[in-house]
Length: 356
Image (cartoon, rainbow, N blue to C red):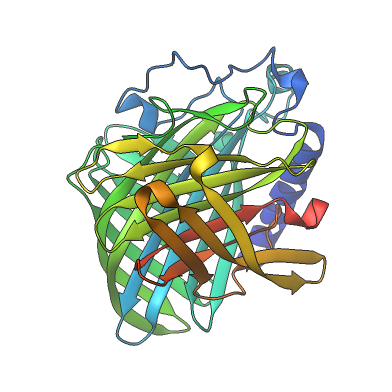
């Protein structure tokens, strides 16, 4: 009976979220009178900006970890909590739909890619974010720690996998873009965006009944916006890299229908300082794609940044890291081939609807 009730609840939440996506898309012009836009004079402050932003349309708490173990070898973990706010006029209905929460959790090895998706509404008490101390959760998946996020405990479970990771850093968050104002298009679409790319990790994972200690590196991304994409944009490719030197690299390109992709990136020194990279001096080329039943996704890239003497060939740990979720995308751990060594994570969205 419990399994049946859980299935019915998840089905109803899935249908509700699907309707939400149809009637309330991110970036719709109709949202301008209900939600704030990301503005360049916004001052990110901690710890409050680790929490919710109810006046913005969408936001997420995003953790990726590149790990190693004796049994599984190299592997990656993803833990993500998304929040979508509905327009103010919809909040007065008898069925409180003020916000939808969606979470993704995944473990990827060379042989396996396991993932799960969950939905909730905050008024049901099944998801949310609190401060003092910090906790972000949906059902029994959680990220919890101190107010500065210097320490985080990540917990999740699903079919064929579970994990508990302890993240720790001595660094302050890195404000992406210009003081946390991250431009996403030539027409001014933007978000507020900061990262914590300096976590060291220890903990355990369990895959198909085998439990194993792991250690490695992790990256937290926090972002919120009300008009993330313009009408001409169809999706994005996002990359985070931990270089063996201790330096970090963040790059993204937002793909446009006319082929004039919007590129942005940050070079993060091992002392925590950051340099915004010139988009004109970044070369991103697709080297290989993988076919799925609905189209192709690039799974091998060449990224060249001559001003940093970086010429990176980026290849996935597992090419089959496709997330066949409500909004499908590809996400998985990657490694570098060539002179510069390192590991990271690659996310690619928008390919199902528009093809490539």
